[in-house]
Every structure is written in structure tokens, then in C-alpha cells.
Image (cartoon, rainbow, N blue to C red; front, side, top):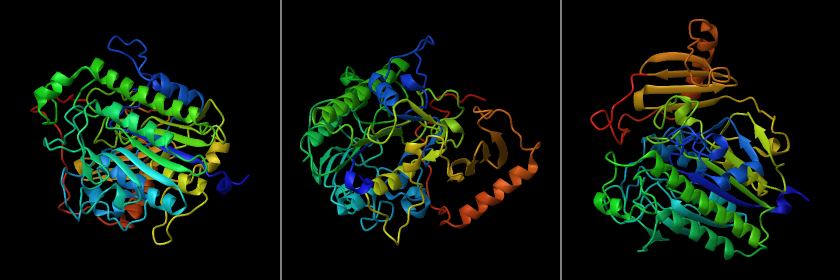
Length: 444
């Protein structure tokens, strides 16, 4: 049977600010250093599928990665992705995702798929921008960059929970509401028509609230950075709540006998933040160090992916857009060709490697980065570094002066890539949630 005839379903599960080692299968530990049972369902997904040890996010901050995911292209092609991250605005025609731009859901919908987004959008607010203007048949979630788990408001305290284009009020913990809606969507699908479900949790993004922390939500009154609360225990419970919901989604697929021909992908939009575990990497969200861009990545598709596999091939978020579209038997819009690679060959051979470099740039700290095989060129605050991230994943041995020719070649290749894209606008903004006045910064 051909790929086009198979017509697989797709579920893309995106966590928010999840660290590389926040799952049991990637090394989660509690405050005493003992293994932490944070993610039994995702650990099962890993055993039954393929784990990527070099999964990269398109950016070290959330909305740029989301631009890349939905378009399958370098996020830098769109003005809104220059914001780090997209601010909590409404009605902004310049910064949001243009409705006329082809997207993963619009391409699949044209191919006959049902499409739904449950959870976080963060690609521009209504009425000019929104999920249903960009290819989703259904939307249940919020538009901003963050949401209170009980008050269901944005970081400015404004209500931000929507059913399609209608503001709605629901009682409950937001992670659970999203999990329940995802299960409901699966249960309503016709077995003869394939679907795309984008399940974009805000967990474990701040505010640091588990199911038992409604009183803390009331204290915060929707005003969001939450620099005066949280703990490792609370954070890991938030991850576990999300994992429980993912288990319910897996059960729904099995109940509907859809599991074998459904490709599930789980990852994070960027590296972890305050309470995350990014081991063995240095850096976090907002850094192009490995801790800011290396993310957990798992894929399961019983019909096409052998259980228990591991791949060391570097892959990036936007690769999944092309992979889904090609697995569905369709193609990119000719005027908007994909920049990502299809990972279908890798499913058959986890050692498959297209040998292509990966690139990043950020206005924050004037960062530049390039991955080419084992090697990484990094620039931060005008300082240049060269690392072998296979031998030195913590990026502590700067080989710049030992291999100047390699560094120069990588810098030249980065500049050629950068020149092929629109420059970062002068008015693009960097928005940091907290600074040294809130939390101490480690020296190194």
C-alpha cells in the first residue's frame, strides 16, 4: 500500500518550555537526585517508537518555533517571528501569521483531513489572525504566550479561552481541559477520514500551578511572571498532569483502533526555563546553547516506525511539517517551498542522515549558531566559540583557537544562510520574563 493510500492520522503534541531531561526516558530526577516518575505514558511512547537524541527546536523561544512549525519554513521569513517572543497583543496585522500563508493544517485540510488545534496558538490575535483563519477546522485554547491554569487569562489578566472565535468560560485545570478536548476530538472522527490534531499544551510554562494550586492562582490574579513561587516538586507534577492527558489520548486511539496508523510526535517549543532540567546541557530558554534548543523528541507510528529505536541524526521542528505533508501524499505550496527535510527515510533507517547544516539567529545577545554534524559554531555577545557537541555536549571546551579554519568556514556558511533571509528588523523586540532584579544569575 502506498503512503498516499494509507492516509495516516497525525497528532503533534507540543509542550511549552520543557527541558531535555524532564521526562523519565530522558533522565528526570527529583531534588535528591533519584529517578523521577514524571512521564510514564511518554516513556511508553518512547519504548514503542523512536527517540531522537538530537532533536532541535527552531528557536530558543516559543513563538518563532511555532511560526516554523506551522509553515515548515525558516521562521525568519515572517516578520512576526523576529519578536522574541511575540508580545501579548490583539488585532496586530503586522506581527501575526498572515491568514493567506499556506500552513500545515491548510495543506492537510485541502487534502481532505479534518484539522484541530487544542491549546496554545501564540501566532497573533483576533480578528486579523487566528487558528481558523490558518487552516484549522476547530480551535479550543488561548491566543497569548501564556495562560493561567485556573483563571484562563493571558499574562495581562485578560480572559483568553476560546471555542473557535467565541470567548468561553470553563471551570477546571487548563491542562486537563485540553486533554479532555483532544480525546473528544478523536472520539468524534470518522474512521474513514484522516485527521491532524495539534495538541499544544501550555504545560509546564509558568505560572507554576498544579491541580492543587487554585489558591495560588487566585493570589496571582492572572498577573503572570510568577517569580515569587513554584518549586521543583510543583513543576514535575505539572509535567505529570500533562503526561496523564497524553495517556488518555493514547487510550482514545486504541479504543477507536486508530493507533497503528497514527503518527504521534511529542516535543517542546524550546529548552527549559527556571525549574527545568536541561542536563547534560548548559543554557536554557533564550539561549542558543544546547540547553536552549536541544529538546526531547519522540515519534511513534506502529505501521512505519519500529519500536525501541534511537536516532542521533540532527533534526529540527520544521522537518515535521514536511514529513506530515508528504506522509499524507500531498505537497507544499509551490510559492512557499518547505525549508525542512522529510523524515520518512529516517523512520525506515534511524541512522539515515541528510548531512545538512542547521542554523539559528537571535536578536537577544546577538546570538548566532550553526550545527554541522558533530560541530557547532556559536556566537553570543560578540564572542565566538567552536564546540564538538558530540564529545562535549556541555559546550565547555572551546576549540576556536585549535581549529580556526573550521570556525572560519562555518562562519562564512552561516553568513551566506543569513543573507538569504530578511534581516532582523531594528524594531524587533526582546522580552525577558525576569532579570537579575528578580532572580540571581549564575556566573558560569
